[in-house]
Amino acid sequence: MGHRPFSDRREAGRQLAAALAFLKERSPVILGLPRGGVPVAYEIAMALEAPLDVLLVRKIGSPFSPEVGIGALVEGDPPRRVLNDEMMDRLRPPSLFLAQEVERQMRELQRRRGLYCGGRERIPLAGRTVVIVDDGIATGGSMLAALEAVRAAGPERLLLAVPVAPADTLEKLCSLADDAICLQVPANFRAVSQYYEDFAQTGDEEVTSLLDEAAKRILPNAGERLVSMSTVSKCMDHDATVVGPHDNVARAASIMRDWKVGVLPVCDGRRLIGTVSDSDIRLGTARENRAEEEIRVAELMSEDVVWCFEDETLSAVMHRFGDSQQERIPVLDREKNLVGMLNLDRGTNDPRVADEGGRNEPVRRWMSPHINNSF
Image (tube, rainbow, N blue to C red; front, top):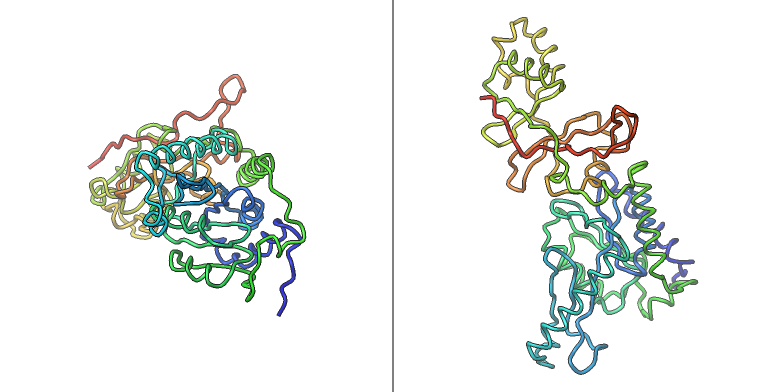
């Protein structure tokens, strides 16, 4: 059966977005492979209201011809080198050449990241659902390197999504992903361009424009570089005071009044085990018909806690909790210890506050690395 060509990359992206609609509630990160994968990824990110980023992959050329790839370098912290064992055995490139070629491609990765994203940091991928997108796959070399590199970053779930690919290549790549979405798998695959009516080259300006537009649309009124660049840990708040499960709720209520907050994290040592709010205390004391001094925090606390990691970007966190009614989000390190609290500004969607003169100033204290244990 014949395959109807996509009118262009944007239409292919909209079709993929419909197939990926089941991911919307998981707040996935969408990664487009530049350049052609970015217009496709943009449509997916807009439909899923998900953050969009690029994943830069550079071919490592052979000492005999730069067009012959012996591997790839994928950006990351640090960048990940993925070598083709078959080509390495066949060509046996000198170690000095390999080191110099990797260094050259690393500089190019940095240049392109700056060109496409300005000062925006990469979106952390650990613990997230990640979708890697391209406008099509032929041999699959770049996608293979991308999947291996992102897998090493520790995502909770990794998917690849492309409009068209040959069956044999797709089967090979599926072993590296948790799931794959491909709209067309032609029996007699030709070049990717044959499956588009308009396959004009995507320019650097278009890539930059789409990434900027995605950042602004996903974070209304918060497209400033402060949010795009900053991780949670860089934006400090006052000390985060916690209570223990064996404290009485009178003490918790007193702390909330002193700090003018409506919720406190409950910790066993540094391990977050729940939260307790002023409404929990009011309702709980009325229900139990006991004095606050007689009721332990453990009896009223909620164990259903939402939280974020300290190395996540503010943009990713604000997107995930944008519709939440919770104004203070516990912040954990990668060992799941509490390291602070993130205050979400509910006055506007813009992470800025007005000073006494009415001017907007960047919030300088969002999360505290200090913990005052109250038990």
